[in-house]
Image 1 (cartoon, helix red, strand yellow):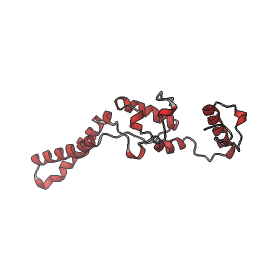
Image 2 (tube, one colour):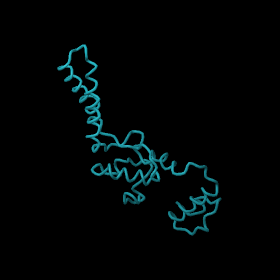
Image 3 (cartoon, one colour):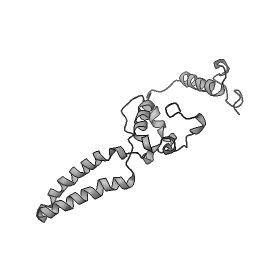
Image 4 (tube, one colour):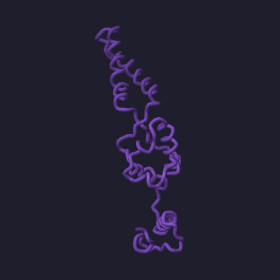
Length: 162
C-alpha cells in the first residue's frame, strides 16, 4: 500500500500483481518493491519477457545463427554452429532485458508474495510476539486502544469488527 500509493481496499490476497503495478514502469517499481518486501535480501524474483519475445530470443534467433553458420562451414563441422547460436542467445538475452515486464506464473497474485515476506525473519515467533503484531494491526485497523486487545480477544465478538 505504502510503496504503490494504494488504499487498503485496493489490495486483497487475490489481487493480480499486473493490476497493481503498471507495465510501463514495472521493471523499476518491481525491483524497488522486492527490495522493500524482502528487507533487501538477494532473492530471485525476476520478471520475465513476454512469451512470444522469449521464444524468439531463446529459439528463433539462435536457430537462425546456427543455420547461417551451416551455410559457410561444411556439414561435417555442424557443431561449430552451436558457438554463434549460444552467442546470439546471450546477446539477445542482454538486449531484451528491458522488456522483462511479465510476472512469473508462480507469483501472479498478492498471496503469492507471502513466502518472500516470510524470509524477512526465519526464526519461529513466540506466542507473545504474534500477539503483539496482531494487537498492533488491530489498533491500526479498528482504531481502538491497545489496552482493549487482549490475548483472548476475538475480532468480531469482542473488538467490534462487523
